[in-house]
Image (cartoon, rainbow, N blue to C red; front, side, top):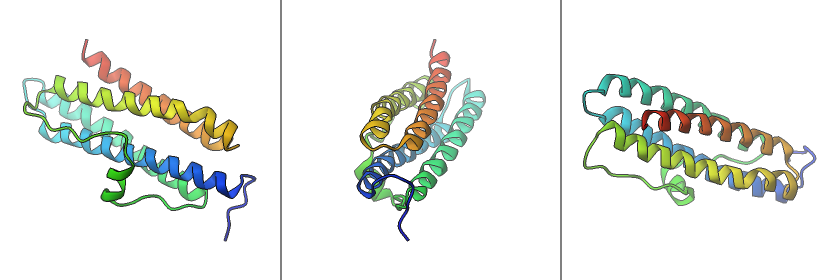
Amino acid sequence: MDTQIGIKPENLTAVAHELNKLLADEHVLYILTRNAHWNVEGPDFLTKHRFFEEQYGQIETIIDDVAERIRTLGHYAEATLAGFLKLTHLTEASREKNDSTGFMRSLLEAHEAIIIHIRGSINRFANEYHDLGTSDFITGLMETHEKMAWMLRAHLR
């Protein structure tokens, strides 16, 4: 059954495609954050281990919300690692040293890349695709990433 929510089918398709790119970015960020959680070393291990756990928990919620938004629009959410790697704007990082500062810098860069990508989509979703709901939805996601980035930035000072 077609989704009839007052948005043209071609606009729903375009928005769903863009949301799948965001979903891919969120999955890569999730893995980067899990990596930091599992592999951080140093005298601040326990506090950073817990901090990264809190962050990947937030990302896990974002992932589910993005996938459900895609389904709400009548499209399928990407659900393969190969698909995520084709769609993502991020790169997987490899580290020689597993210190918290290095992980935090990498995660901050990834959050900021997602923030910039989302910021570029807000008005396009509203004005070009006439999807104010998704525009509002991603504005909230951007604010969540801004707060998570602030937390990382505060640790780096």
